Image 1 (cartoon, rainbow, N blue to C red):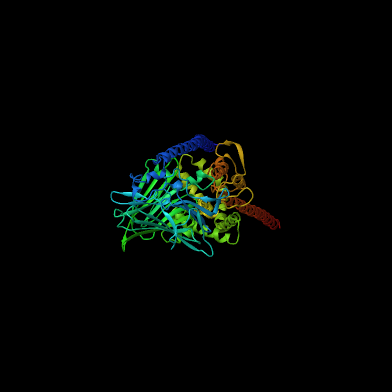
Image 2 (spheres, rainbow, N blue to C red; image 1 turned 90 degrees about the horizontal axis):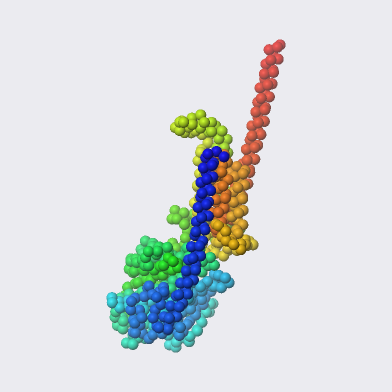
Length: 612
């Protein structure tokens, strides 16, 4: 091993030691964080029980951050009700089951029926931790010096056009004969003023229209309505840590997008924005809850967050307008999957919440996603589609990759001459550079020809990463056998102990991918775009498969599948190129023998003529 190889090996070994050391340091931190969250939950439950008995708000209540200071005394204008004793109404269509409470006329549960987790429909909303917690779509009547939250106000529920209140526990199922339903919550204050909250549901949509009507004469202090998201959203995935990493609160003001994650609230608990609000949203990895004002107008958006327990929340404050003696305000509420096509249909830029990678990579991501969905109409297995996509990309880049392999081969053949130049001019770097470029020119070799195709393929790879990891289409999409979710790491089996880097999960696809990379280097190709014995140390060439195996180990199995198939195809292509090279060498050797024989024949003929 020469000095360069030795230094490279030492650098790699140190990197791996640091990586393993970081894992051992970070794993206890994760475990500590998990234990702390459990202890926090226990303390919250204890505090909430005390709060329920005493009638005071819980100090740990997430929604307390959104409540005005006078939240506990403000509802005197309206009849007060405890959420525990409030009635409930359920509305079900083919997409969701939504439960609403007569306490505040708010949404308390949203189940998405088409998306199961552990065999049950996804529930987007966390359970309230006390009887006073606000629900989703909560409203605060806000004035200059007075704020009245409606979460503790008692309402009665009515079907559209009915004068008789609905009994508690009423379930409305939308279908063929009942495609639309409007639910109204009414409350009458001490001064006789009436507040009406209404929801319009459709059988064929995730979207719910929500609005409020009130008489300004009865509530003269009201200047704006503050719409809240209750207690935020809960994790919906089995891999909660992965889900938490995608939690986001976002808003679009005019053409300006603002997006924050829990990590952005390490030193602050709130963030405020003001402008023309197009929408406000909270999202998990695969699902989103968004409010879209029916009219574009100036408003205020507040985001709340806590980094330590991945908490995010939001509120939308919009000024009211009086029309014909009545104040009415309406928003569209979308609660459903982060579906690019569905979100784009709103025409307000809501699709920007779908993680498609960096701005310059999104066109490629959209093309890949469109291809996946188009293929899925014919082929029901996304794993097979990913294999087909791998073949298509290999065909598209075939000529470029072919030139890359040939450039690598030419570079390898020049190594002896390059080494001779270094030995000859070892004390003159400028001369080495000049002679090296001259040798490249004479040999018709491009030193960047080996890595350039890899760089050109990187946008496709990055786009694939975003599509396979974040799009709802790949959520829980099975391939074969143990690979039952292409958006997650494939886990063949679990170990009884946790190991560095791989934890307790044994994944087969990354190991197969690493073996494929190693075989590729053996037959003359390399993921780095160079050949063994070329411009980089051999030790790095053979250790790169190991590094990439660890990098890919916990990545989505769909992405690893794509890269593994790409490696297999690259090996076949390299084998074919090597076969061509061997045949060319045989032909060259045969030609050389023929030329030699010809020269001998010509020389012998000349001697015979001379002897005569």
